[in-house]
Image (tube, rainbow, N blue to C red; front, side, top):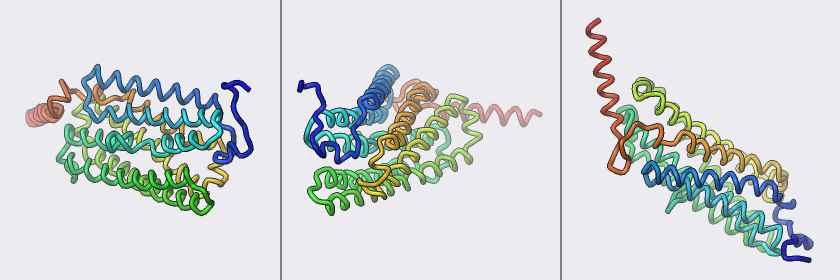
Length: 294
C-alpha cells in the first residue's frame, strides 16, 4: 500500500457515515481559495476597511475544514474529522472574534453610517456591538460543543456535544434572522436615501441581503442536521452536506461581486467614513430646490 492510498480500516469513516468525496472536496477547496484570493486582492487593491479581511480568514478556515475531509481519507485517526468539524461548523464567527457573519454585521453598520444613520434606531457602533457580541456567544457554544463531539469517547458525550453545538447554531440562526429582518426594515425606511446614493449602493445592499439569506439557509440545515444527532440521516448523508457548502460559497462570492470598495462612492475608507452622506445631502438639497421652483 502506497502512502497515497486511502486507509480504510474498520470504522475509519464511522464519524462520517460515508467516505468523504475527494472530488467534492477539490471543488470547494478551489472555490474557497478563489474567493479568499479575490477578497485579499480587493482588500489590498482598494484599500479596504480592515473588517473585510475577516472574509479572507473565513474562507481560509473553510479551506481548513475541507482539507480535514481530504485528510480523513488518508489518516487512520480522528484528527481529520476534528479538523473538518472546526472548519466547516465554526466557519462564520471569527477574525480575532469574527468572520463572515461579523463581516456582514460590520458591512451593514457601514451602510447605516454612510447612507442613512438617522433612519436606524441603533447607531452604527451600537449595531456592531450588539450583533457581533451575540455572534461571539454563539461561537463559544459551537466551539465547546464541537470540541466535545470530536473528542467524545462515549455516546453520551457525543450527544452532549451535539446538543451544545445545536444550541449555538440555533442561537446564531435567530441572530441572523433578526439581522435579516432589521436589514429589510432599514431599507424600507431609507429607500429615498438609497435612491439618492445610487445604484452601486443598492447593489451592495442586495449583495448583503443575498449573502445573509444564504447564511440563513446554511443555519437552517445545520439546525436540522444536529437536531437529528451525528448518527442521524442528515449527518450521515454526504450530499445533504452540500446545503452547508453551497450557501456559504454563494455568501462569500456575493461579497466578492458586490464588494463595498467597488459599490460605495468613497475616496478612501481608511481615512474615515465615506462621504456618501454629504453627497446624499447635496442631492436632497438640489431635489428640494427643484421642487420649490415648480
